[in-house]
Length: 227
Image (cartoon, rainbow, N blue to C red):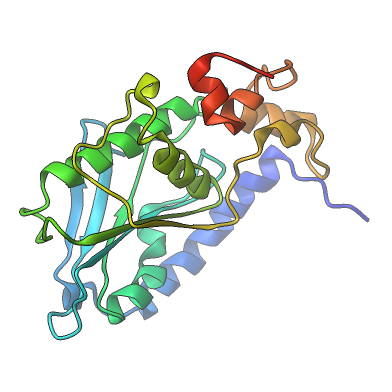
């Protein structure tokens, strides 16, 4: 029997996951251990913030790990990934957990998230000293699910002048993703989701030829092609 994903089911999933995520946060080591900078604003919107945690000096490796959470572009929370981030902190790697604006569930507009990630990276690039980072630190960008898509897009967009997502002198040493949503063209035929579900998080125009392709291929999007 195939499980069909619907909007109410997704909302229920987010609601049920909150207590579990709060428990994980309580069980994680005290944030104070990692000299946190919480809710750093990189923009004016309340969701344009990030948390930064510094690895202990005795194991510090001069590496920064920037993590972007998932959540179907409509949910998820950057603070829920702190237990995951603590693994890297113990290895001497500084960590930034990024929040971004979510879709309202009426139409997809990933340009908001792309702009937010770009703005956040520009902020980090221009505030390295204030964030306790060296100018030659190695920087890795990561994300899961929707966050994986945003991480991949950001990495590819660095040299795409037409997109206007420049990050200043910031250079990435690598990109690490977990189950990224990136091949949007295949979402038109994906099984297990109702049309209402697809319309909710992909937008009302998701059936139009080329609409989702624009989100799958950054080069085509930059040039205006939809092959």
